[in-house]
Amino acid sequence: MIRINLAPERGRRRVPGLKFALPAFNLGWAFGIVYLLALLAIGGYWWGLISSKAALAADIEQAEKDLTVLKAQIGQESRMKDLAIELRQRVEVIDGLTQAQGRPIALADSFSSVLPNDLWITGFEEKSLQLKITGSAFSTTAIADFMANLRASGKFKDVDLVISRRDLARPTPLVTFEVTCRFEG
Image (cartoon, rainbow, N blue to C red):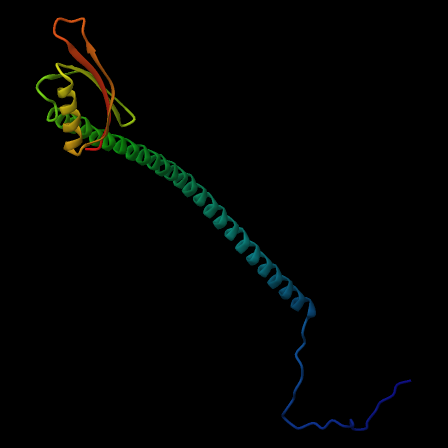
């Protein structure tokens, strides 16, 4: 049996000329587009990671090259510092030698000015700033004058007579002596 409903629809009124309806939409196409967009987003993110990895690897390689160059420069600088230290030490030694050269000259000059005419020096030693002078004279007066001249010069300190002997075996009797002092010129 066939039934036909001729009653009007309830709740809906139709306005003549205005018709509103949802378009027919296929969900398969919607999921396909979303899937394609997700694949493109994941691919773009992966490509960004790969390119940043390559850039970081290039930066690391460049940094390692720079590090080897800097290590070489540091090695040269430390070698230069060692050479500079050695050069300073050499200059100090040369300065010490040139300053020490003046002392023997001043000693000889000061010593020659205090010698009396009748006195001869036969030995002259310097050990740790202590002078040991040996010699001969015709008289003990010449030795006393020599010691007085050493003291009077102001450059010789702690002047002491260690030995004084008269040698009677020679035809002209000579007095041999040994004097110690410090030179502070």
